[in-house]
Image (cartoon, rainbow, N blue to C red):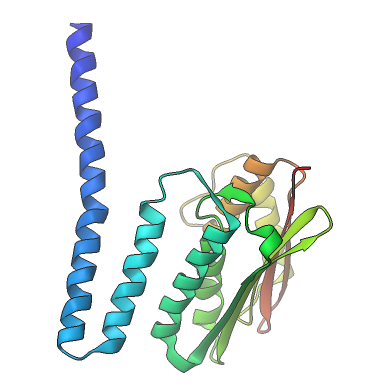
Length: 219
């Protein structure tokens, strides 16, 4: 009986793996179809949007590893910002820069995109003026400094203190948390790099927010 149950569990796992593979494949086929229809019907912006989303999703879903290089992370950030740029048009601009010496650094996959998404959702969406986001990674002695900055709605000192407390807490972050992306990213990075990693938040209401990560590089 135990052998039969094990075989059933194995079959179930294989079926689930196949189902998970079908989902992105189906999505890519749909986006490619939309892109071709947009080309035929003379809608270049729609075609560009479909191509960008397809490339972004392929990078995210088909990476197949728990970690990625900083270069790969910044490539995703560029595509994500380009998609948002098409959404906001002239009301948004972005700058993404990764210094060459920082690019091989490995870190948890998809840990920077939530920081940028957080800036859109909680910063720029609440801001009436033209928005911008700057993402950079530079070498500073034996550390890599990653900075995500926006000119959005900003945070109060009380809110910043609350975020720090949530990051240090061993309890899981609630689903109702407004900054779950930022807090979850910080916890993932701290678990991956250990106590040597530091995160610093700077923010002024109605001026903007900057998140700075200081990541030690192995010797």
